Length: 533
Image (cartoon, rainbow, N blue to C red; front, side, top):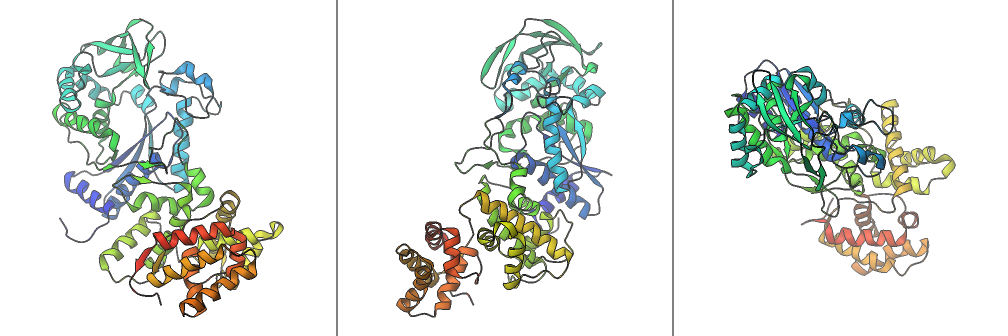
């Protein structure tokens, strides 16, 4: 294996290449069809797609499969959805009517929402519906092998997870021919000659609540596609049937993946794919993003305030470890992407070669290896928000464009102008919907002291004349040039060393907001040992 420094996506791709010698490599992600897709579920696809791109970078042929789990049953009614869906709890989501009447089923509606997100980002994939895959018989050889070896499968599940259930019943869920539910049935026997499963609709616990079965006893042939393997064996069947070489998984699926790996090797006699485990995105309260409870951030919400590249940056920046994320973080990722672009195009230098490789790779994958022809103007997001706030409502865009030109951000061609217009639109939305803005700041000790002093004195002022005078007062007290104080303030507020007139900025953003931002910057900023030049 090469010892050359590699980005994490490339390391995983290299592991896949070394483990499998095939003509076509396949990466996969599951498409949840039970609720609204959020940035956590989208990141599953994005990161696996990154491995596919890295394999192609190695000169290999690869494709990405987006597999919809739409044979799964409906467990909960997602937040904000019609209560009538409660009547369909436990039924396969593709058997549930679409409450919005724009797709064939609820499951199709939900799958389409994630596929729309993938299309928005330009992710190329082969879509596979679980319902249609089961109907087509593609998994039949694997289902047969698992049911014939159900005793062995049950033992594996027990050894890995401690769950005894599948030592008593088969790891297969028939759809009840009477009530239509899939989570209330138990498969009691399998006839390998007719390839039929006998079942009883006894009832089951769904999302923590018990649902009585209808008592129906029936039989389902696996060729009908009216049933599915339980998760603790289905992944193995999919990996084997589709020839999957890489699939990441969330922390909550650790036991399921370990179980399926063993079933792959010991029952299906197929080597399972390379995996890597990622942790979840959390909300700002440290809770898991939840589809059903409405505690989520959708890609549509993010793209209202930030670019697709800023969201891809969030997903590719780090793979391991849980991260708290909120819409309020968008300015930080917009600014970080700008820095990456400057590094990639050589407009910003990095002495650390290892860090340089990471930053360049992160920029490349944030663009899905489709590198822009040249860097954009990218004025600081915070500055554009400020200009949107002070702009006249009837002529906001032209006002902001003219002001940015005054600051040196004048587009030279349509490419630069179109990119600038997108950024102004993001900032206009932010200025309308949010009061404050977040930036990552690096201040030295002197700058921190200057910023704190300005924040303290600013509280006593009531007008723009007073706001501006504070800067000169602090400069005199500390024995430094006023420009030194202004530079520290702009770094704390805008993430850059210059900006609009300080007093006007305070008026537009609100004195209290500015004071809180300055205090936070002084307390939380990364420190340096020497002054910035």
